[in-house]
Image (cartoon, rainbow, N blue to C red):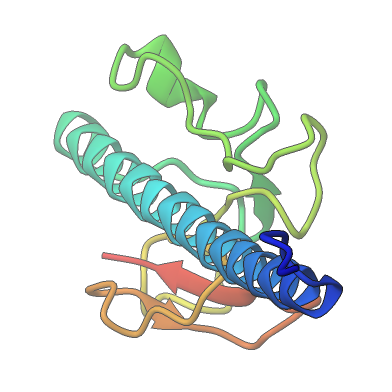
Length: 154
């Protein structure tokens, strides 16, 4: 008499295929998430640049950090003036920010001191993926971990 049930081998093959497909789906989902976070970072930087240009129009200069870099996360930092002058409702925060300044998950703003006058300011940020087609975004020296450091300036 023939049985109408599946054999153990058939069940193992089906379970293996389901496991493989779910692994591929999870990996591609994480890739999409990291690209979405990078897109938000680029949009944040564009928004910062636009606010800095309005600030420049109003004051005929960019906010100065005196030749150093500082985290944009710090609420009393140089760019806090963009909020106080209503040029931005709130300074942007990296999508993976922990809430405290960290080199891996924050935006940094710097204005040159006497040592460099080739650009009036620079915003540094990190992307999770290489993004050479980001438009006026310049790769900088990789500093920490598997992320890619970029900067923008006018």
